[in-house]
Amino acid sequence: MEFLHQPEWHDFVEHLQALFGSRVVCLGLQGSYRRGEATPTSDLDVVLILDVLRMEDLRAYRRCVERSPLSDKLCGFVSGKAELLAWPRADLFQFYHDTQPLVGTLDWLRERIQPSDILEAVRVGAANLYHAVCHSYLFEDRQTNLPELYKSPFFILQAKTYRETGEYFSSRQVLWQHVSPADRKILEMCVDRKTLFSGPLSELALSDAYSQLLTWCQELLRWCELEKNG
Image 1: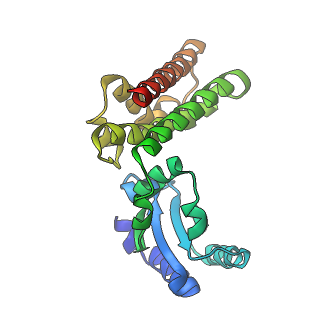
Image 2: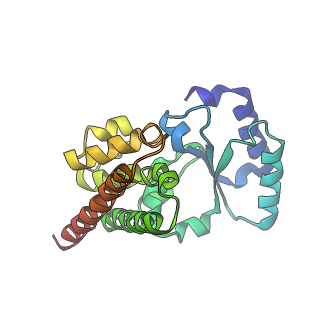
């Protein structure tokens, strides 16, 4: 991650450490920069876990963000440790594996994530995407929403593949090698979504894109039921 050696990022991390000191349980990076897939327009997804999170901490963090040259790129997750320990464990699977700790650790979360939580991560992801596909097709701008809809399968497939193999694949390129042909087709659309959906689509092309996602979600939910009962 060459970006981590840039002075603006180094200064931001130093400021956070000076601001919160020994209260930092974990300071890390998520998203495209963590995966090595960032583009010039990518956000910087920062994770900050404190011993306890108070409103004054949010105010202080906001001031730190506003003063940083990276303010237009910064986003991410902040929490107190107790809240994260009480977080839905299906969410913790993705959170734990997608975070690269730079200061501190998240190892204390790992033992809380059970195989059933990973299956639930797949189920919830598929159900949420299923609903989003239907809602977008019926009530929203179908073309505009497609790139975001086709972003979700990557994260769902990370959980599904982990459930099947016990390995977490951070990048789309590596994950592609370990999924089924049907899942691979969806993942290819996920990787190329900004190019595929950059121009106007015909009614037929729109229907095909939505149909592909809808069918995939239906099959994935059936897979979850088989896994649960098998």
